[in-house]
Image 1 (tube, rainbow, N blue to C red):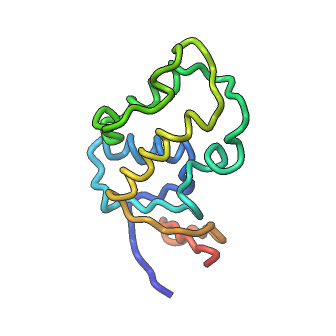
Image 2 (cartoon, one colour; image 1 turned 30 degrees about the horizontal axis):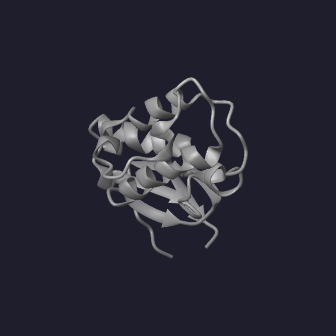
Length: 135
């Protein structure tokens, strides 16, 4: 069993997990003090289960999210994603939103400590959380 210590642990790589990682880095947290845990790093259920579902979120809000964290570095994307060609007041299939979110995931994965797996147990002892992964 390997025991490693981090100041921050984010469980999940869906949009909420992306936002947390991005905002922590934006607020000056050293990325090497962040543990990011997910079994796949494929934008959570949005990226793995709901691709063909139509979103009820407007394109403009997705664009705002993509540009919402400096750490995302989204403005540096070499190729523009399909979502940027759409009317900001319209909605779109989730697959169109998932593509740039996957790009951001891949970008952030290079900055923080990654753990591929599912959390099996959380235990608080002496004011420290211990996270055990299933694998």
